[in-house]
Structure formats: structure tokens, C-alpha cells
Image (cartoon, rainbow, N blue to C red; front, side, top):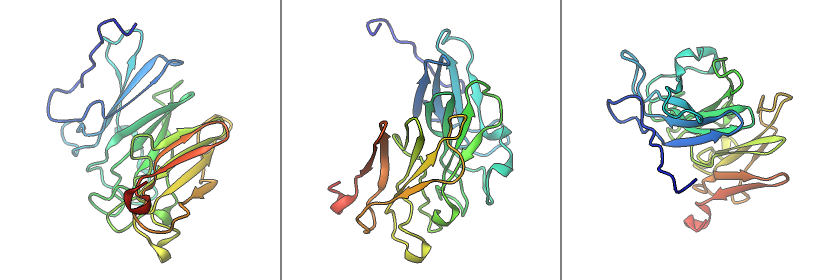
Length: 239
């Protein structure tokens, strides 16, 4: 009923800027509206901009949400050294079937402001269980302080029945032996029998234009048989 008064959801925290609502998704099957707040600090003693994700019950939006944050994620989920500073858990959130995909947008594999992000996948049928994850191949991560921006932007993750596509619009072209800055790559992962992405990508797609600053993969979408990729930097930002 769009004529009814809206329900206003606000960050449970009243201190500082957390960017509550930067990312939003929902699941009618599991009765959740899901809100990312990537700039929210952890509890006292933890670093800034570590992030949270809130799951609100659609049947009772006044009740306390379920809160997800990085505190319970073991360090073994990352394959290289990392910093908790500016982790940006919840930079983007999206739902596909039984799984919640959460982009950890500020993963610092090489230092501050290096956005080599990755994605955690939470099972909505058992939300407190440890998540699984996907990340871009390590040799495609940028060490030039630009980062990969893997699934970092709105519309950066797309789904169909068999695949999950993730845009990495700052990713290098080809390899570090032929690094072309911000060319972009779209990684396509096959779904396993549980219905979520797993393992290494089965395809790594790049723009037919090998020039830099294409931002190929800035936005992605899928239907049953096609993958659509935005590349707004193509031809001098003509797109």
C-alpha cells in the first residue's frame, strides 16, 4: 500500500556518521529487509569504518534487527594479510535465493585506501553460521593503490539460475605483466549444489577495448541466458 505512511528505519547507533542505508536489499522468502552501514565503527576499541549489516523482520519492523559485523569472521577467510581499518563490511548487500551477499569493500591487502574487496555469503536459513566467500584471483589484484573494487559498486553483483557475476571495474587488464589501469574485469562464478557461488571464477571477461579507464564491470545484470556489462569509461567516457 504505497499510500500508507512509510516506516522510517534508523541506525541503532546514534554516534558519528555510519552511512546507514548506503546499501539496501530484501528477501520476501525470508521476511527480511537488509540494510548496510559500511561506515559504522565496531564497539569501543575497534577500528573505524569496519561496518555492519542489519536484518529487520518485515513482519515487525519495530523489533531489534539481527546485526552482522566482521567480529566473528576468522582471519583464515583472507588469503593475505589485512587491516581492520576501513574494512567497510556492508558496502553492498544483495540477496539471491537463500544467500545474502555482503561486499567487504575496504579490504587493505597492500595498505590504506587499497580497495581489493571481496564478498561474504551468509546463509539466510542459518544467519549466524560462518559465511563462505569469493574473491578475485590474487594475480588480478591491484598493488598500485587503486584496488580491484570487486563487487564494490551498486549493481556490481548479478545472478541467474546458474551463475553469479561480479564486476571489478578497477581491475587490471590481462595481468601485472601488461597492467592497464582501471580497465576492468567481470568475474563469473558457477553456483554449487547449494545455490551459491563457490571456488574460482569460471570466466574472467574483459572489454574488447584494451585501453585504460574503461571501468568495464561498473554495473552488471543478468537474465536467464545473457550477461549485461556497463563500461562507462569507454571511448573517453562516452560509455
